[in-house]
Length: 163
Image (tube, rainbow, N blue to C red; front, side):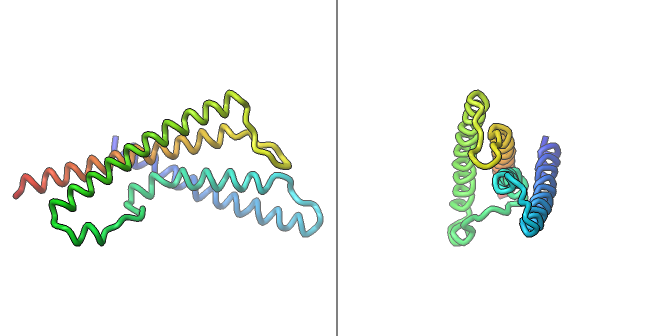
């Protein structure tokens, strides 16, 4: 299961890189087309969709690499047992919050699909596919957070049994 999650996080991160390259090309082509007097309609809306997708699909890989901001200087200045407790408590709080976020975004995606919600702009873009991708990204992030929490708990349990 861990290897599958690792691969999914890696693939979503690689897809983010591809999306950023596509975004760069689209913006460059639009700038060129504007220069010759023929702007491409909907580039601003499409850019926003690509950026949102990129951010949320990259979260799981960042969590897997422990790349998110944490307050290590606090954990380094307290006794080891308190540090262990704080690490687990923060992991549990993060996981609980992410479950709520994932559920909320899933419900929001369904509502968006049912109402055929579209983004206002020069070119109307249906929003539910973007919300579905965001939901998937948050879901991967949630599962990765749980995995990191379980690994932290097992490492702490193993270290405690050695003492």
